[in-house]
Image: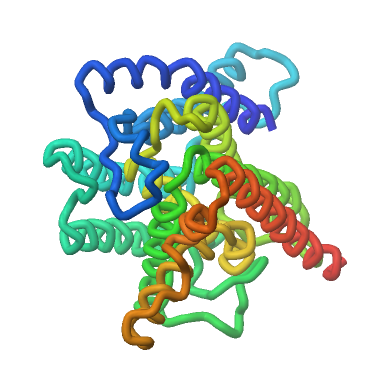
Length: 368
């Protein structure tokens, strides 16, 4: 338990106090955001705001995850009483999820840098970005489906899952790889699209990762390695994933201090792609893929609004379903203030998180 609290606290402290230094560095070098001209005109005042804030978030997550293991490990060796799980080793699941976040964050960083370098709102070529995302996703999927522990449990499962694996829906390995790849692409693009208003993605993602901290801790507490009874969970490394989820949630809460309206810095693709990859990894590695759709409902709605907009535009001969996509811009074009849109979509995200956790817990209650 203390590992989880330590990870969240370290992540929060790093972003809360470290983001200011990063902002000053970016301003000194004029590394600012470029705003698309076809968007809401109220966003033009944001031109030049420092971006690539996701780099600080990733650093905070790394320090929170690694630091919680090392600090408590040293304390445990020193014999400090009352520390549970002291000396907790790094797990393959945790390392894979963190690695996926860092790798996709690197792609996002390259995309942000291309925007700054070429002075435009478009970054990497779409084809190059897709190739990089696909290669990273494939590597994660293949690794996650291999390397079983002493009990024969791999980090990820070839079965599709709701609150746990569905044994009657086990996929061939090649199809399971494609399924995991699809989830990584869907969530990374969903979070990327959600990151369009001050604090929108940061606040909603903090809630989603906080929810997975609870889910992972519950899976560990009710795991089959601890309780061989009906309803126990078969998950590879839920406690370590709870540590990672707490580190992300803490880092986002600290970053929100600087990212709330009026934002002093943006996450950029560095942060949005990393967060989407991390969320996808948690849904896959905890075997809660369809519950994850509920917890991350806002990300799904933002992505779906773009898909519907493009499809309707093509099928209707140029008509639009929304005033503008993604969804948050539609509400802005209707005349809602940015802060109103953010708060109301935070409420949607919060209700979805509560619904997802309730769905997860209700399934366990039914099994008792």
